[in-house]
Amino acid sequence: MANSTALLLLSLALCFLPSLAQFSFGQQGSGQPLLSQRRLGYRSQCQLERLAALEPTRRVPSEAGFTEYFDQFHEQLQCAGVVAYRRTIQPRGLVLPYYSNAPKLVYIIQGRGISGTVIPGCPESFQSLRQSFEQQWEEEVESQSQRFRDEHQKVQFFREGDVLAYPAGVANWVYNNGEVPIIAIAVADTSSNANQLDRQHRQFLLAGRERRSQEQSAPAEERIQQQKGNNLLSGFELELLAEALGVDKEVARKIQNLNDDNRGDIVRVEKGLQTLEPQRRAEQEAREQEREESEETRENGLEETYCTLKNRQNIANPSLADYYNPRAGRLTSLNIQKLPILRFIQLSAERGVLRRNAIQPPHWNINAHSIMYVVRGSGRLQVVGHRGRTVFDGELRQGQLLVVPQQHVVVKKAQSEQFEWISFKTNENALASHIVGKASLLRGIPVEVLMNSYRISREEARRVKFNRGNEIAIFSPRRENEELRNVLESVA
Image (cartoon, rainbow, N blue to C red; front, side, top):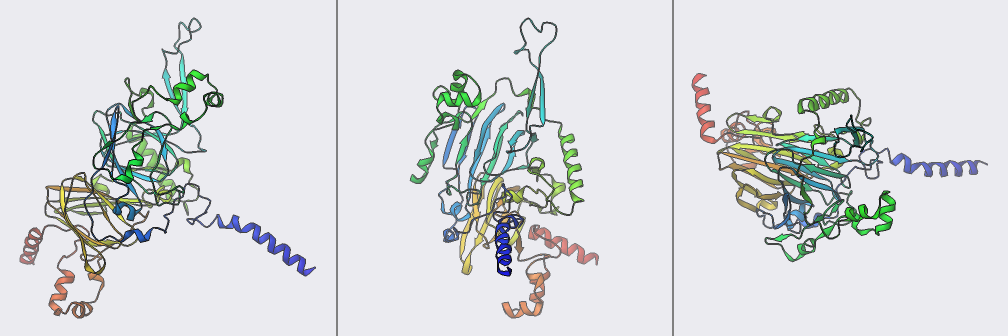
């Protein structure tokens, strides 16, 4: 009897193990369907002898814009396990609905617009009400215009400096309701466990068709991406699709878009999307602030649902900077604390601005690769890898991209009047360790250890440790720094 009871308890325990494992928050198989984790099987691809500034190699034109792709097979992007592309959307341009096999972050370099994300299982709780003269009922409605009520998931306004986060497999679309082109840079994490296909970036069109790309200097491996692609619905049998959608075959044929639509995946909306104007930005931000304040009172974030998660955050506002030096510039980070949806994206971002000759001192990323894209200006970078080997020493200009591998030390110096960049990091809580300055490596080491490590005098060790004063992360030009120190010493 005792043996039977023990066997029964053991069987019950084994049955419950999968359920208990789902509550292991933040682990693979955690019951979080959108949670993305990075695979570990690609570390051997980071044997980089030299780094190089990258530019787009492939351009895909559309009716109302174009997309420029960086070579996803380049060893730097293979090391980081990501792909990168830059998209330009003309005014009244609509990026047709699609989804991809990898989570991504998008940084808005220029322009403003509307973004929509359709998350499975979330209700269509937002409504657009428009007076529809085109669809008036003949004879039945002569004195009153027919009102058409549309239900859809949330749409939101975005602007220059915003970062937008999109989980893998979640459909989205974008519309330019501004007067200037939208320019955006995107990084997708193909090494995420959310992508169970392969490390090739794939976009699944839900409407339209992609035009053939224009080669710039594409390698042979990338030619597999240069075939024209139709939308997913075009692959179904016409009658079956019509039955599934509940429409006639003529409508289904238009949806399949097999032959007569060469607009590409960014199309022009001649009269604009007048019904999709979201609430004014002030109202939107006030609502988000109220939600954030209510979330701060919770013990944890488990009450948060996918449907209400905010997926946008502006990092260009100077008042939001994490580090600010009026003579040097500023640095603003975006991580899981500021944007909780990054828990499901497993990426973070950092925006830097340096004045001419200002420096971001030597530092390394502890737990992430960094994919750096220059938004404006130019700067000189040096990157040093294992055993003190310099793997990059050169200029990085506007529109160029550079991957700084994990634990490689990098230093930046602005060459233009303003050097501005955005870095995408392959960890939702990326950490950096600075070598010099306040709260740095050198500050944390005793003077005598520095003396014996570098074979320098006590006075020299003190200068190495304290000469940058209280500057942190962003350093002013050396001449300005010395002049300021002399003024302070004369006052003292």
